[in-house]
Image 1 (cartoon, one colour):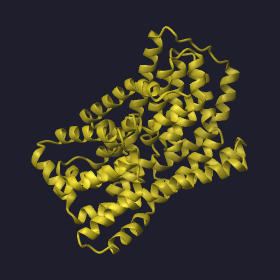
Image 2 (cartoon, helix red, strand yellow):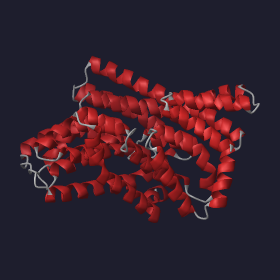
Image 3 (cartoon, helix red, strand yellow):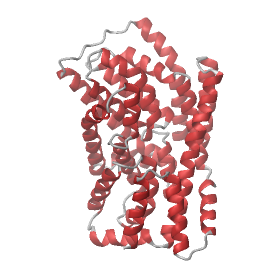
Image 4 (tube, helix red, strand yellow):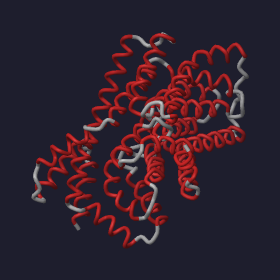
Length: 424
């Protein structure tokens, strides 16, 4: 009964639009006071939530992505990829997916990926006869790669919550991320093959390929160096974020000379706002997590689940259904911070690998990013494409099915996510 009342209060406050950080922190403080616990626990929770070397990577990766965004790197990547694969069947759609994957690998942000590539791809694809709902759905889904393909800010937060290896999580995201890209590409090529409105793009000249490739090359070198350095153990993910930020400044400011002083100030301001929002939510979630732990809610939920769910497969299915429902009215970070403290005990009880569960959880969160009415990527694409929400949501349906199919595949074949962490 207590669990039901607490969850009802939590969801009611979120549904009326109260800020997530205030809801989590305020409800946590209320539970501490009602339960007769010391309010000083809240202060301790706030301090401990910020006392994490790993969390330094969040603002630094955000700075890196925003500097690259302001420097026009997304447009350069799209132009380079389009020059090489644009003449394929569905070539523009393929270029869009590949560009999303590349930008995801250097931004770690779904919204930044969807916005950056969408600004360039939407007018080009619609001009080539791609139906608008398909274009919007492809970009909204392609943007979700930003929180799966490393370096991912959401994976960093998951690692902090579960005290699991950030490096292992990053490596585990590679296989499912590439699989999603492949499935998106295959669907796009099949769609173009059978579409009556599709117009193939002309083959780019070698001069165009060289020029666009040279423009995108420094960014690809930076992305490759950061990711390889993490995997090879040259530096930690936190150190990689600092190197990535300095590299982004060098690429956009010295090599490409595309970053203005105003752009740099805008990138810093945007990264500061986003970092503050994320860290405040983490702090509120820490207070809420301590409060529900003292009320023994995670233990009670774990006991209830293990008593009523007879297998790990049934538990995974129940969590997937729950996240699909929650994704209709909650954003990604909130779902992660609310649900993981509650589910962590059950994950351990069923013997589920915490790294694998993180990838499963992230893909389900990706689904939430493109489900109405609160899917953030839908709003981004709607604004860029000047479209109705119905038009964007209709286009995402095939990609939702593909993403859920990917969840099914990694459930049946865990090595898709775990082969790299186990063998590197």
